[in-house]
Amino acid sequence: MRYIKGQRLALVSPWVLAAACALLSLIIGVFAVNNYRREKSLMTDGLLERGATLIRFVTSGARASFLDGVRKGLPPVWKWSEHMQEILEHAAEHPGVHFLAIVDASGNILASSASEKVGTRVDDETLTFIGSIAQGVYDQGRFRYRVGGSLSESGNATAFQVAALFVPIGKRELELQGSRLNSLNRGGEGMMGRMMKYHLFPPEWSDELERVSLQKYGILVELDLAEFNKAVRQQFLQIVILSVVLLLVGIGGWLSLLTLEGLKGSQSRLSRIRAFRDLLISSLPIGLIVTDSKGKIVLCNQFAEQIASVAENEVVGLIPEDVLAPELALALNMDIADQKKSPAGSVQREIILPDAQGVRRTLQLNSLCIVESEGAHAGVMLLIQDLSQVKSLEEELRRSERMAALGKMAAGVAHELRNPLSSIKGLAILLKSRFQEKSTDQETADILVQEVERLNRSIGELLDYARPQKLIKADVHPEEVVQKAVSLIRMDAESEGVRVEIQVEADLPVVQADQDKLNQVFLNLFLNSIQAMEHGGRLDIRVATQGRNVLFTVKDTGCGVNKKDLPRVFDPYFTTKPEGTGLGLAMSVKIIEEHGGTITFESEPDVGTTVVVSLPCM
Image (cartoon, rainbow, N blue to C red; front, top):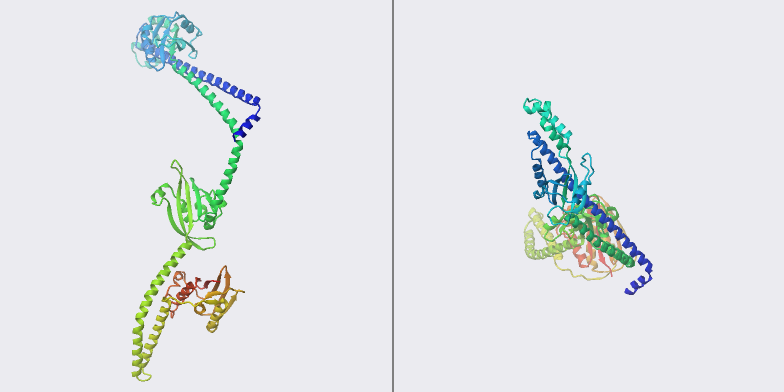
């Protein structure tokens, strides 16, 4: 890698490097000079504006003080300089102000923020600076500034000075003030009112007022240059730092050209990683739906598409409530507070949701908030797991445990009942022999014997269900089992008006089974179907292979079974027939399970019932 970089540098012309360095230096120099000038201009304007503001403040204060004295009846020769002294001292209290002074045309200081300067004379350089102000009518916008020697005792070699003409009060302003006072005193007849009515001011004041109004002085403000010098130093420091930064940027840009090829390779590897990640997420055996901080779907993998019956390109960018089932949308509507309430760190719930084929599935939903490093809510991740098979196995296990317990109890009860039943039957026969022929008592004894025999048969069936079956397995052809069972129920089918249709697939494999037990299963299934079609119908029997299993499908058009009774059809002693014992289907399930097969039952009222028996083949 080092060799390749050195080779690339060797291929670059020295003149190209020199031109790049010269261009970079020119850019840095122009940028630095412009920044320096701009910063100096801004600081100068700021100091000038500050000095001008102080001059306006002093001018306004001086005129207000002069007119206030006139309104109070004081002659214009009152100690005006002392009032100016107070104003200047007050203005000097502002931060960054060194010195303020009122100077006459000869350079004498009439008033100053530093009282010890009053009566002294400014230096020639400062007098020249003040005298450079344009003569003529006073103009507030006419200010002069310079960076020169300091008149204060701050110890600074130089300071920023701002100067302007200073006129205490003009004649026109006196007239306007007099007119205002006349209007205010129009209703009175006092001495001041009569004086203002006939004469603006007393005659003895006129000359003095005229002299004061024609006087023009200079006002000088001296400001601290510490901030100015500090800003200049900072500007130089910034120029140095910026030069170094630009140099580093130039070096970094040059190095970035050398690493461009490596960046392209990294982007290619990143694209492959992203593609692999997308494939991995899509192939997960659990559903995954992710929303962003705005609640919009950003990811939906293949398993989630199947469960929610949606397509990812149709739901990405949309709100879950608009495209998903309400149960799934509710699971995605959570925040960090909901997650903290859950001990498991995620919100879990189970729902039952039909898929696109209408099959009801039991789903476990795990909702987990996605939290950024700052603790902000970034979205919600929903994991969907199909628990339908697990729930089915759990239900089958519970049913098997319940049946085993019931079988043990039934075996014990049946054993205890058989001996008393034998005694009852013997006593009933003995009583029958002592009654007259064809008498009512003899008929009653016959009924007692018949009921005892029927009860004994039920107990026998119960014992057969409870005790383990000893299977005698052999090679059995599926079509022979079906044909033999149909031959046994054909007479019953014809008497009930039921048409039997048989479809047997060719070349069916043989199964290892007990043929007598299988005959018992299918005979029971066929009789149940015929008995469900009291007004005639059709019984379809189909035998076919599916993978390594043989499927026996028995479908009738009978009365069907209510949905609420479907989970109980394989329970012992559950029956919907008046004379049924409720052990037929229970025995059939037990026999099929002992053969390693399964039996399923589907029914709809007034439509019919379909039973599918699956047996493993050899």
